Image (cartoon, rainbow, N blue to C red):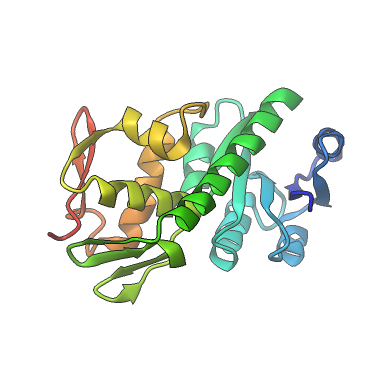
Length: 232
């Protein structure tokens, strides 16, 4: 079955450009010209959303939040304008997996989509191959069921967050360089910057820390990376 991609873009010319290039590469494409339309089209048959953040009415950030809440396993790539650094961060914090900056080439677009699909596929394969539970203090990761709990209470994670927590728990109490995190969770071929690591860790902290502004479980190692304590 072909990968199904929802393209959310209010500019018809850009939407058409994306659609043509995706269809040439055998993707199944549906379109939305507004945030409201995108929300109405969301269902579990969609694999990836390409989501412009600057939409009239319901903006892309809100669409991203609603899509992530309703379908945690969905892949989301936001489209941002060149130089709008804040849009990248806000989109990632809203739940996006990656971003691409306009203007972009068909080659870059396809590379980003295929990179995301590989990461999501690798996560599924990892779960199938590793049936061991991971326990770290008050946290438990049930790998084959893709469940994560704190003190027995389940916490919903996105696929990227799940892989990140799994990597941390496998390397508990060790200082891990951001390079190592990026390479092992996003892959050695990932084209992006370190901010995607930091933003995903902030999202995880919002879910697991008693006080995200004073994190106890994922500690920043200044000038280096992060360390997972996990409540041990």
